Image (tube, rainbow, N blue to C red):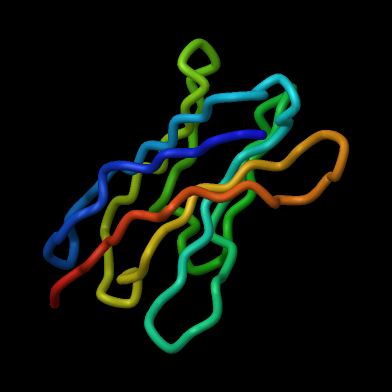
Length: 119
């Protein structure tokens, strides 16, 4: 089991920045990638970004490329999402997720943190 705890959400004006954090605990040695999904009211949960290891390869959905950056602190088992130039359409609940080596699927989830961008 892997436990994930997000923090860092909040209310920000358009053009502003936020940094989300996701701390993993438990069987972190069984994880080979972490990422972020988001879900806006009335919409399905969508992929935002992920980072895998070893190698630190990262992926982003097109709408956040150039604005969001995912990074990882190995020593703290923590993943960060730096979000710059935020837009109202980024408003959503952001969920941290972890991929287990054995399942090759993102099936561990945090409770989420709310990001609201005002225009």
